[in-house]
Each structure stands twice: as C-alpha cells, then as structure tokens.
Length: 293
Image (cartoon, rainbow, N blue to C red; front, side, top):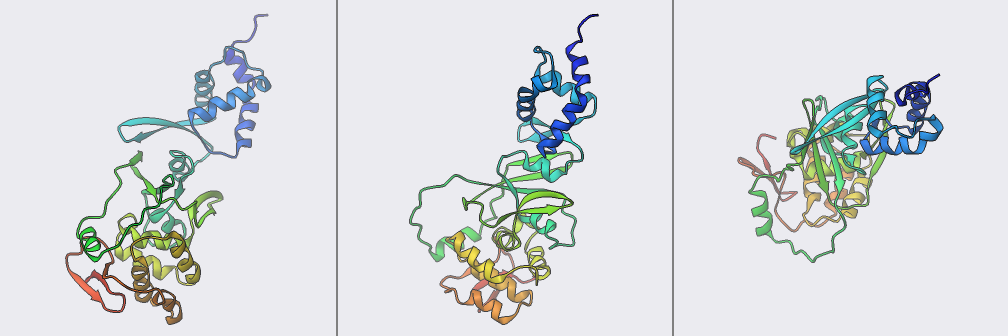
C-alpha cells in the first residue's frame, strides 16, 4: 500500500484542524498566523514533513474551512483568511495590531446614531514623543481653524467599505474597553472617550450635527464626571472643553453637569469645527459655531 500524499494527510486531519482554529478564539487570520499554527501543530496533525504553508492554506480554503478575502491597502493588496462568520470590524482590526474602533464606528456600536454607518474607523496610537513646551496663541488657533480639517489618506477597502486607519495621540489606550457586540468582543473607545474624540474630529463622525445628535442620544448612558477627568488626562493643548461644554448645553444636559466644564478656565476664542463659512457665536463658551447647527 502506497503512503498517503501530503494532501490526503491534510484531509485525514481536517477535524483536528477545525478544532485547533476554534481553540484560537479568532475569526480572522493573517498568512503569518496560519504559518505559525501549522508550525506548532504539524506533528500533532501527523502531516507530511514536506507540507508547505501554501498547501495548508490552499487546502483550508478549498475545503471551506477558511474563506480568503482581499483587502486593498493603499497601493497594494493583502489577504485575510476568515473563519466562521467574521464581522467587517474584526477584519478591519486585523489590519494593524493593537488598533481599536473609534469615532463614528464607536458612535454606531454604542447606539448613539440612527444612521447605518458602513465605513469603519480604527485608531492606532502613535509611539510616545518627547514632550515639547508648545505655547498656545489665538493667532495659531484662528489659522488652524480657518483651514480644512486634516483627513487621513490611510484608507483601506474591503469590497465597498472604506476603513479609515487613524493614528491618534499616545494615551496608553485610555478609556479603551472590551465591548461585546453581537456576541463578539471588540476593543473600542468608551462612550466618554468617544464623545471627546468626535468633538475634536467631527469629520470622522458625520459632521457637527451628528456629533450633537450623539451627545443627545448619550444622555443617561455615561458619566459626565468621567468624561471631564478623561479629557484632563488626555492633556490636549487646544481648549476642547469649550466645544464639549457647548454640545452638552445644546443637547439639554443638567446645569450641574454643564458646570463641570464651566469650572475649567476659558482663555481663548475657539471653534466648534474647521472652516466655518457662516458663523454664530456663543459668548458663554467663547466659541464660534455654524449658524445652521
């Protein structure tokens, strides 16, 4: 009797392969992930020594253990291997290790919008930088907010879905939580952190009207005290407390909660968003905002 071929041995080990993939707890694999799984389990599965990584992956795809998908990543393509019914969120997070869901994706998952948000926003914190003594000046604020908001060019694509690959300030994953969504655990910014992030970068959250709507829908779902302490810990140069206080007031929060933001000194005229064409002005928050808000 002739010995079994490497492909026949893979067929014999199909159940073991399935169990091993289940035990990882993952639904999305990279080529490197699968290469490592083969290396660690080759003997356990009793595969031929000549079984290559490509053999294992080709077999898994052919037998529908895994589904191969393509991600358009800037000017190149990369592949992922899907086990069971992986969500697009899991696929998006697999593009960059240690990334987490933020901005409009976090708004949607936390139930703070009535819109169906198809595009996905992930954040990967930058490496720590040496602290520099930046000095804020009104002229610098005015110039910065007279221009369009800087938007990332790092956009990946799965089918018709854009994945915005943001690179945020290094905050040691401040207020990043493990959140159960449709029985899948996802790393995502908390509601408090999400409300701060979208106030700072409204264009990653559907614009200022959607940000205001998120603040309105968030009532009773988060701690304003925690939001304020988180904002202070984030230690931004710009006075974003004026923006957040304005949103809380417009969304109809209680005076004592708005007062937590009023306690922070207001030294500069600030802007709700970038390049406001038709401005209105809040004297209380020393803040310019769009008239049609």
